[in-house]
Length: 144
Image 1: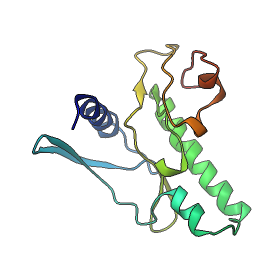
Image 2: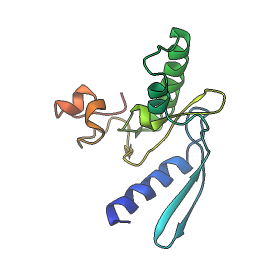
Image 3: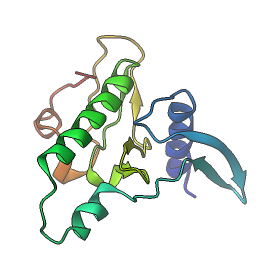
Image 4: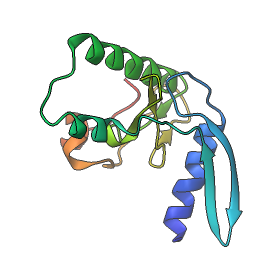
């Protein structure tokens, strides 16, 4: 594990260990094994949203299902933004589904904790096809 990967994993542990929300993957514990940091979190039996979309093979989800997931994701984002945390990599592969279809936001490896309200971030980070306009335009951004 490279130093950068280890730092990202440690940051994810710090962010997740201080968070408890029904729509965020729950952190259980972490430990180091053979110089690898292992993070134990709740298992989401439904896999990620990307795989769920692919498994539909072009069949559309109901509007009710989409709105349900959308509201859950918004509530998860509100929770982290209220704590001055920027996820910075929202994409279907980082949105997980439980056995009962509840959404859980995960993968906080590139998250950023802002030190104070009103602080702005400048780093261009995330997955290219899912970047928000302000990052693509090299503008400052925050939790809004």
